[in-house]
Length: 368
Ligand SMILES: *Cc1c(COP(=O)(O)O)cnc(C)c1O
Image (cartoon, rainbow, N blue to C red; front, side, top):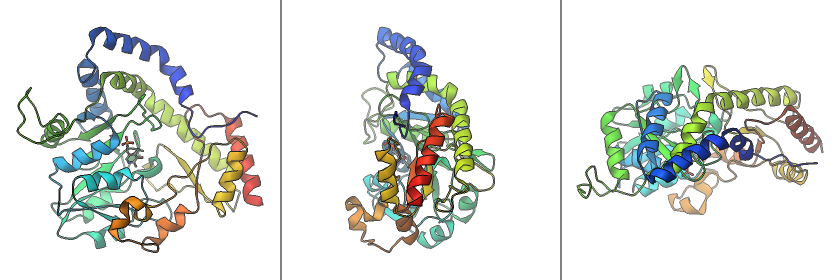
């Protein structure tokens, strides 16, 4: 039996390969490899797609978060609040500004940041709160915004939520500023590293652009200490071509999520993902919860099913953030989830047969 990957990027490439090749040929002929018209075009398209109005292409999603925070003036002595269960990049980006990551636990139902715990984590040093739209579902930004004191910015980590909406507001346009990643496996994926910052605030947009281009808005004039974090044209071509299909591909993810729900909802050993009212997730990942997760995962993998874990270790228990001094037991919900979560294969192009095979294998594994 052929194996079923967690994500099938070859299916996507088969849809867009010809258009990408034509776009790349144009870039190669013109030799505008960094910045240039292809990048400007994608930035305009993504600014419109998100509804944010401004988009700045950068080198990757981690840089996007860091540049967004730096544009807000976040630095040493400041604190930024973020969930303990996220990909490590959210915390890394905060630490790279010199600010202190202040972690909070997540909600046991939808795994998103627990708003009640955010209140308690805010201090006079708090500059930003970074909700992570984990697994493709947006955090409740409207409720969060109501709770934040003045001067505390809402910075979306929108790396997993391209195209998601909640209460009518789109991911990337719901906070003061948003950061996203176009790492190949994301819903909108490049053919290498890439990322973007989106915002409706023209001043913040200009600040991000300045910081990512060596602190320079005019050639060889450097009034600000900046970085090199730019989007290259070959990636921009891929992103423009794929953006035209993103809504359709997200629809396919939604249909696949529905199919898993139908296949698995009778199984009491499997906790299904919870979607909040008013939320339209884009299913970056389909994450269920099971007992004996490691055994179940090993059995699925042995059967050729590319299930995975996102993420096995909450941020506070990684070696990188041991210095925060938050030991085991600090964030019980995130820790308990870390031992139970299981990501099932889900991608545009997944077939009903593939999903039925995953469901059969999971049913057998949890019954042991
Ligand atoms: C992928 C991801 C990032 C970082 O993106 P890179 O492009 O890999 O730097 C940040 N946050 C979350 C939640 C992610 O999934």
